Image (tube, rainbow, N blue to C red; front, side, top):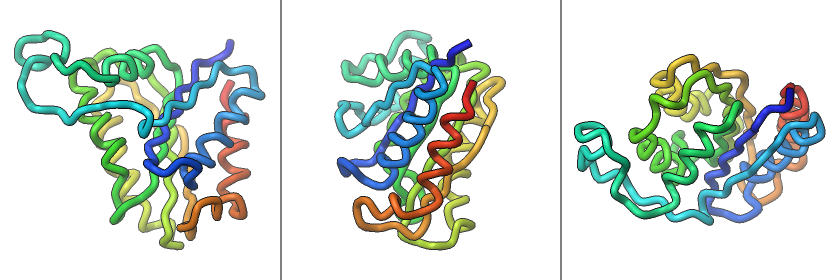
Length: 180
């Protein structure tokens, strides 16, 4: 059975290293017959959570009129979710964190999802990326039945395109291709 694979690229930089890995993951997943979509957060308008309590206290939809509701529905509908981010000061991009915070409205509906994490950073030490992945795990730990299926470490890359010359390219492709 084909899977719905949603890849969320959170880089603000078109053609950035984490986006390149996202595309490579998507290529592999598509070649395996999966329905694959890459969403680029820089092309979306997603406001900050205001903490108004409408979703948690009143159990009503978020009153903000932006792209978050549509994207959260895509997350609910997906079988596999890939969260891709550049690493800034050993943390995910603000764009990705804003989306995660906005998931409060419907996170209880995101059950049984498989998750993959992709991150890129200038630092060459993979262990230093764990803080970033731990932040993403803070989100998935709140989701019933969420399963972390793999992490792709794009280390030692700063300038656009540098990731093309690293083992992370092949890893992203093969990881996507293995989804069945």
